Length: 163
Image (cartoon, rainbow, N blue to C red):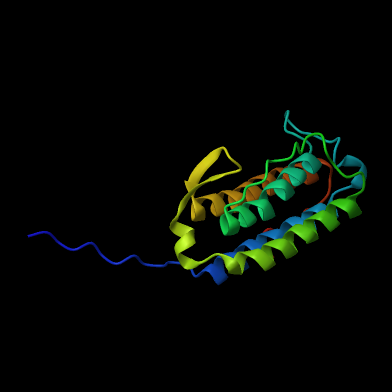
């Protein structure tokens, strides 16, 4: 006799995942705001890329990742190391536009779509929820580097627990 497989269990509703991500995005935005504009693309510690380059990577991944999961139409990742805005206000505007796009697109992901396998940006195969979690984890990782940079510049970063 074989035991039947248990029914799939949803651990986190899509709305809760989006709210969690947007909490991280609000915190990352506050970190960008705290960063000295003249250091965004120049200051580095230990051979890491400047924080502004990391932020541009996050912008180039977040909304396009959600859009790709929704539509299965994947953009080519732009070269975030070379294309960049000049002013912090431009970066914040791009961040806000990306956040708005995520808010608009994320609710369009059907429940079944989260478990589908796809290839993000034509080169990263994975299950949709893993790809979305990658975008969130990548933001947290780079924000942590931004915290180190701010501390090295003598600036107290925003509390990480205030999302």
